[in-house]
Picture 1 (cartoon, one colour):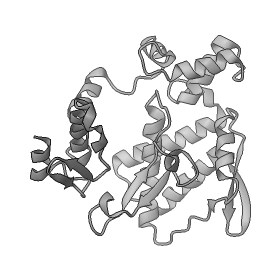
Picture 2 (cartoon, rainbow, N blue to C red):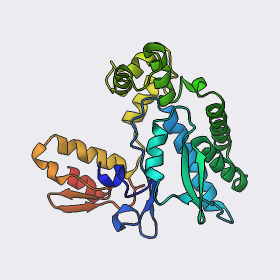
Picture 3 (cartoon, rainbow, N blue to C red):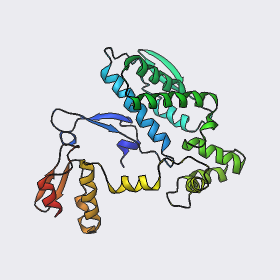
Picture 4 (tube, helix red, strand yellow):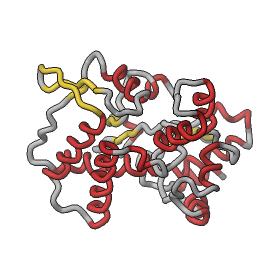
Length: 270
């Protein structure tokens, strides 16, 4: 990762204009999703909400989203939000020249209302996910602990309350929060999953199919390319960017992210 992603240089949703990031005449929508999720539900819901908001913004006749990030407090407010399980922390935004503050759930509801105003032709799947999104907002505002089988931060908070008395600042609680994200089978999350204490997002068979049958996009080619590099450590200097791949015969370019491969690309892998 880079400081661009984890620092203050770009937002969680932004558009990339570099020529090798997308086909001619297109921009690449770049989502930063680097949080250390264990339960997939939170990211699944977040991606659906992002899809609906972006669709509403693209299709709205009047793009009347009234708020912009605060020029001074955006990152500090989000850091404060991450340490506040009460969900009372306010995030300061700008409405024109006016400073205005909302809680995280209030901002979510503003986005949901924006979608409801501008989209009236949701598919059955989109409508189901919109209703789920609103249910989550309602639950977070009334009793977040009802989501202690789905959302990571609520699962962790519930665990700390049950095992460590609820003091999230204690050394034991801090250690438990770290061990929750251990990706090995010994992690707190996987122990809870095996015990049936949290919801299972997908079956082992579904996970296996996803791992072994990737969608036919440039990302699948990139994965095969990197696997070959890992077999030859002295070749790791060839690490690719998104659309350009270094090969012995010269650079291979696959500019369209929806293109699985090219004849030139397969020759380079061979």
